[in-house]
Image 1: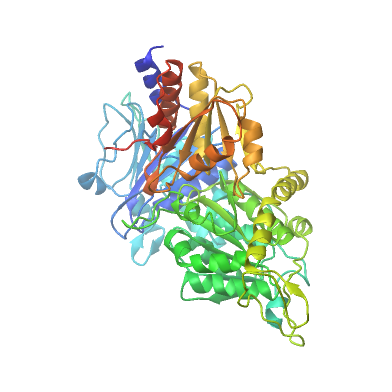
Image 2: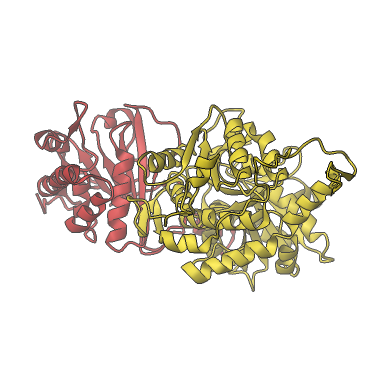
Length: 208
Length: 425
């Protein structure tokens, strides 16, 4: 290898089996908590490597925020920020207006959106969408007048990460919630899982 | 005073906190710290919140407020006061803990010297953060590195498991050598990132750390003045006992630090025997024995560097890694023994002795000065103020050094100037 080939090899070097998930939400929506619950559910489903981090900075209520989750069959060694995620989860569809949520998302990656509107197929990404805001509102998963969509959106990931199932998601929730809150959150996750529309790249709806 | 000493697990067996029964938990470095202090049976906590350390204080406050942890939480108005309270509580015989970051550590700087000079086994977590100005809450290691001469033991952690294990080991080390221990770990990168951590059984931890026997007990029937004005030369006190001069006092302090190497190693070995995990003692290595170019660093950047080593090996470069766990006292003999036959070393510092080079770089150079070898050492600076460091950047730095070396192109300037990773200027 000449010098340029070596540099290219370093830059493209990927650890085996590493799944990188980026969460987009607004300050107060619970993207960080959702990321942590996913890491816990992932670990309980056999991903030995499971980490989740907030974007390292100062967050404010309502401002766009980022959280990340990494899952792997090996312990996670790369604790640097995620540049090219495999999966992007958008908790608030209005974020599309202010930031490029698909930045770094590779062709063939998964774009998961909480939205009231039907989403058209994408030529570049697999898409999962669901109206988690409505589901949370209907189930009374509301705090201070705001529907909580962070945990419900975990239901969408069950379509994308088949190694994680509803029962390990339930076990993970036990670390985060009291029994009453757990039941509500689990119901919402289950309903989101059922109602989520999955549009894979071949444009055929396979679930929902 | 009496009430403080009645706190803690001396009279009853400490139970695991309700929310963290023994077993694996997916938790942040800050949670790991708080659980470590809890399981160690800490009796007094005095701390002032600062990003990114705050969740440590919040978690400990929650343990104490809920009655899960039988300890005294002393609210203070500053880090200077936090360390002052820790000093007072430790003198009367309590097991004490505090945590801080960056400007908070700088603010307690005076008290750091009081704690170490008084030979008090205080354990403190330093959640590494950049020093202002300009203002930053993000990670580098400038805060604890700037306090390397404060007479504390400094241990660096690579991941959240090592944080929990090191806090527990730190109490045992501190109380054996009568020196305060600073447990350093990277802010955000570890403090706010969750990962699997095995939480040990509280009873096992208590068996591991014997009760603290203070060397300066306060006896109301026999009042003494602790740390009075000490003259340069030894002199007799009122009872006719010859007391240390200031210089002898400091000689003994320094000697205690230099004699703590085997203690740090033994306690890590004991911990491994009991809990099955090692934090590396003084330092640890990766793909090291046949390595011809070695990366030396401390903290979580070690994990990234291990990926860089794998990349370099894939392209045929015999690279290896040495991670410093114990930075003070500086394990110069151990490092000399490990590195004496290595010709090429690359240090990665996340801090800088402004006006010269990185602290690890400079200290390692002085350690290797004893060897007559022709070792070349190139010091890189990376990740200041939270600048994201990628494994490929470390691999490229090592690759460039290796390439230059083999072409005979390393010049004096490469060895004496700090080199920067991902600096835009």
